[in-house]
Length: 310
Image (tube, rainbow, N blue to C red; front, side, top):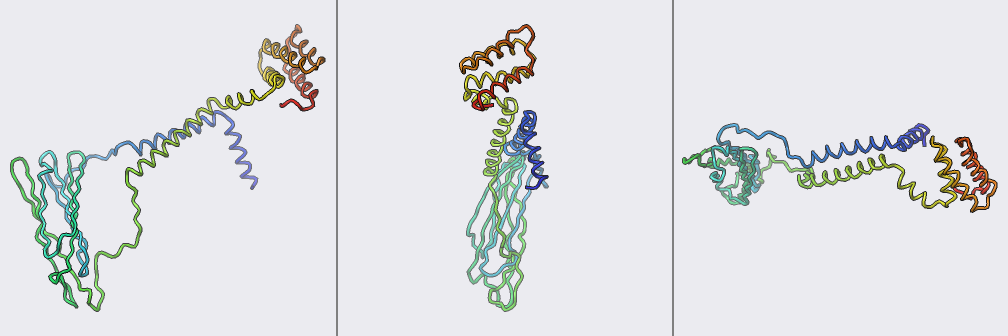
């Protein structure tokens, strides 16, 4: 591993040991969780659409408009209505694509604000001689105009619009022909919105759990670990740990109590000299100094030949 990378990792480990660093990391993760949750669950803030031509707008298309004999043609009619002026349920679409036959029809509707949408998709096919094009040429079909009827108040109305002509070429021609529907060679992967929202919600939940864990470890960084480690210590090891802690605080009474308790534990291990020294420090007139507690701890550990864990 390169020295620069080792130095960077060491610096990260040093920062991570600080509770404040874990608190900051937890706060950042929680902010990311809230932002992701807002994207996943909050409704869209897009404004309600306005119609191009009130109270109704009709869009229509044929695809392809240049095809080979036997190809299917897709017709799409999209009707937008102003719900304040037109009842969407009154909208009717009238089509006539003869000599083509209707293979499939799909209708769906949606709405936002005061605008409703009715979309009709029609699949057309013709394999009869009526649709056969000349061997060296083409045939043009002009379908009947589209009719859209609706009611506005008590009155009925009908809109009509022409279709673009469809040119059909023979498959038996010797020269290549132009078509406006080439084969699709790309793979289109579209994730359903509900699946995307579920995935984002799961990621947000994971970020929330991670952020909460970081905050907890930042506020309460060592207690669970220290408690487990404390329970594994012997009584003498616990007394020595308390001696080390007492040396780092400015509390004369705590130092005297810890020294007296350590003397009791030393008596249990037949260390009379160290016991007397510990009690002498505990109950002499002058306050025990931190350096004296540190030196006593070193003597005790040295007398036990390393059998006491630091």
